[in-house]
Length: 79
Image (cartoon, rainbow, N blue to C red; front, side, top):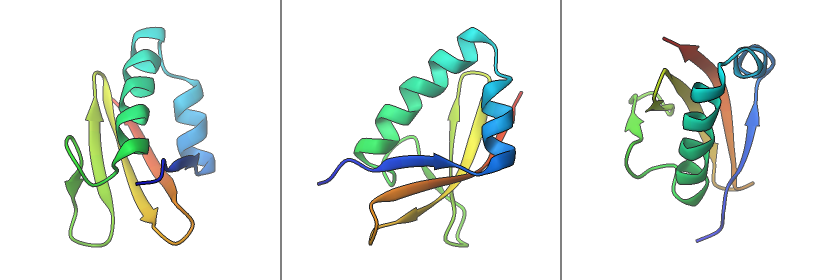
């Protein structure tokens, strides 16, 4: 299986830039897991062609393009 590239929509990218250091580290770990398999744990299907996955301090909502092997993060919420 190919490794997926991860792209962030503008709002999600701004929120990612504002994360604390521990949150950034947790998100980085999650990104590695998702790049290997965006449909496996800890991913959850939202039943509308989007997926979500949590990291320590927040979660991301994303859609996957298998054709282009890209994960598009449409939202990032810090808790």
